[in-house]
Length: 236
Image (cartoon, rainbow, N blue to C red; front, side, top):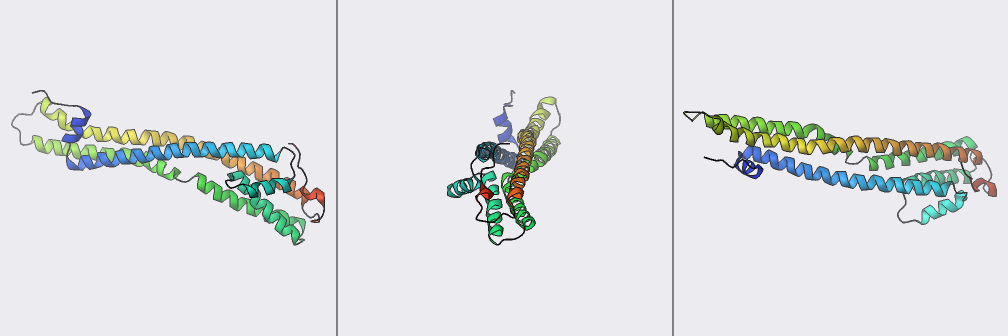
């Protein structure tokens, strides 16, 4: 007799445990793709906002004007929030007439704390992709082993075992491994890509913090009434 060995038929004919494994892997794959697309568009927005703010920062506008513009924005970018936190702390310490070192250290600590918060947000759900990429193949392999065990138990009741009688059971089991790999491979590729992009964004943040700190260092210790303190920083 000709047997239906299509993917749909194999899934429907599989044992309950294998079907549960397949369903879990399919749901995991859908969740993984949701995270992938969300992270892809999210990182693109972060890079775009960073580039836009850096153009404004080095355009020659005064820090006071730039700080006011950032404060008025409803949806500021990550680098803008790092700048605002450092500027806010710098102005607060400057009003207290602390020494130049205290002003700079306070601003740097504020920017570092903001940098870590922004990086935590950017890295969110990245560990989920790593887990999917490492665990899914083993879950699929478990479904395959269970399916093959179930198939051989069923064959033990047959008087004559042929390849035609063995093939459907093994094929049903191997579908679980295929689905596991289908879930794992995109997650691993996406994780490596996003990890590299996030490292570049982190370096961009750190470079900006150092450059901004150098500007604040030149302005630290100057009285709050002096106009040159928050003047335009010029081009790089």
